[in-house]
Length: 193
Image (cartoon, rainbow, N blue to C red; front, side, top):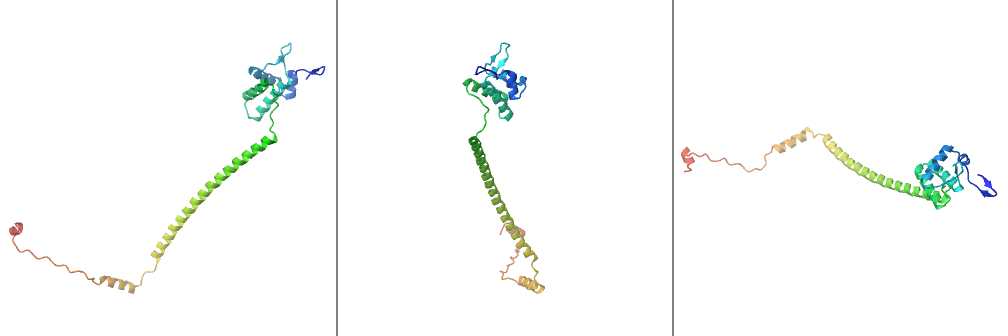
C-alpha cells in the first residue's frame, strides 16, 4: 500500500494478491464478480484496478467464506458487495465466544431431545418385550401342565378293572317297549280300516 504525505493510497493488484496469497487471475475473477454486482473500482491510467481497504477486506471475506464451505462463491460475492454498498467494513466474520456458546447450547439441547426420544422408544420396546415374555411363559406353563398329564403314571390293572366293571353295570334306564305287530291285511292298512 502506497502512502503519500501521510495519506493512504490504494493498493495495486499485485499488492492485494500477494497479501491474500492468491493468484492475480483469481483476484481479477473476484473483482469482476464484484463489478457485476455494481462495485466500481478506481483505475490507473493504464486501466488497472486499485483497491481500497474496504475492497481488500471484502475480497478477503469472499475467500474466507468460500473456503469455509458455508456459501457458494456467488453468494459470498453478493454478501460482500452488499456490505461494500452500505459502506460497512466487511471483515471476515469470525464467531465470537457468545455465538459459539449459543450454537453449542443449541446442539446440546437437540442432542438431549434426541436422547429423550430414544429412551422413550426404548421403554416402549422393553414393555412390549416384557409382555411377549409373559405370554410365552404362560404358554410354556400350559404346555408343561399338559405334558405332566400325558406323562402321569397309568392306573394299575386292578384300578382299570374297577373302572371297566363300573362302566359295565347297567344303569337304571327305562325299559323299551316293543311295538305291537299289525295283523290286518294290506288294503286295510292302506285304507286305515
